[in-house]
Length: 313
Image 1 (spheres, rainbow, N blue to C red):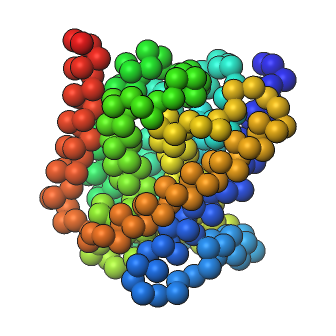
Image 2: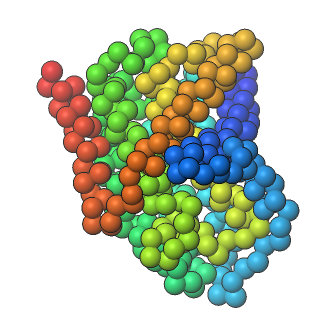
Image 3: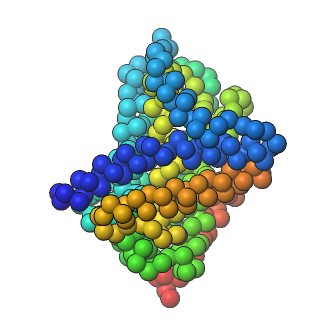
């Protein structure tokens, strides 16, 4: 393992942990503005996490080791997945890091343990949330595989680092197929992060909550880890979309100036995408459960079309 790659691991991990709560807070602020409210400060998510890390952990008397292990497993899986998505600097691939198939398995591992934890506490709300999450996963995961397969075919690689380097070298924004993939990735982002119209991450209504139902029994530091991992997951999926479609500023060589400029540009691009997500959520209501496949079908159609074009063109 080269020194450049070790530096990349440190920079990428620190940077995503630092900025992840910012984008989540910005989305909430935009949604509040569109509803005519002042809303919480953009940095409120940082204050919430700091408060939760100071609180004690309380477990349900019905909880087993799964409830105790889930926050750590979930955070570990998401942080390892975050290493697969360069935010500011694209290093040379090392080992399996960057492999798109392993990336999907890490996301699935985090989802699996979160659903188990929702069931483990013995809460009826947690059980409903886990059941709904697995029902959605059964529909969206084949679509996710097709979307990432389209990415691999377009860039002729299963490694995300190679995709980003190719995008930075060619300027993928001018490629129609990448724009179509961008739409598919946006739908995947909305579904994987449990946002409207799939779910409302800010509600605790038992008839509608999915993600919040699964973490309803989490408290203290465990809840902080679950909230932080959700923010990191949102950021890495945003980065996957941003750095493929608008790769401008992404550093391909390790220099202090290049890293600094890439970090500033990523924050700006991420803030713009966060505003778009906030406006998108504010423009529609949560869909009924049986209406969700129509949203997934759009991503599936675009990705399948791209695969057909790339294979037979």
